[in-house]
Length: 182
Image 1: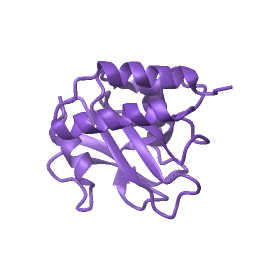
Image 2: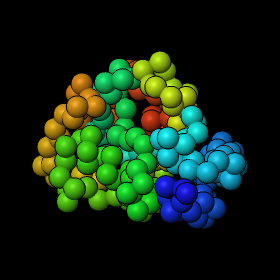
Image 3: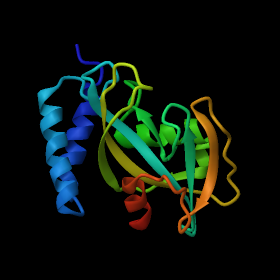
């Protein structure tokens, strides 16, 4: 019996209804739909080695700063995100949960923007166990003024970065997401 059937159904609805902003994002959208059709529990960590994840880029209200985590396993500054859990009502809720857990910000201080912002498919390094690839769905959340992050066990550090001065090794996909902030 599928543990993530409701999330996989949400994924299907989300991906079929999303208008990709570029040809590259459209290719990923179609790849994601094919992967979803080919695998039961495609959003479960215990599902296929390449599986769906949800993440969230946290920004301040004026969109001048982004909150990033220095990820313990990856050793780079990233947006918040991770595996979708069976208890998550949907993919957007998983992205929001990950942002709250990893940033230490109170749940009430984050307003998730309703639109899916970006897709990103990436291979994983040796710091991960059975996972080989993440098919990530990314949202943006706005933090209320004065919200202070707290480092989680998954992070080495959590810090606000000016949009115009991201860490030098910031991944191109995150830079693209930041440059397209609504």
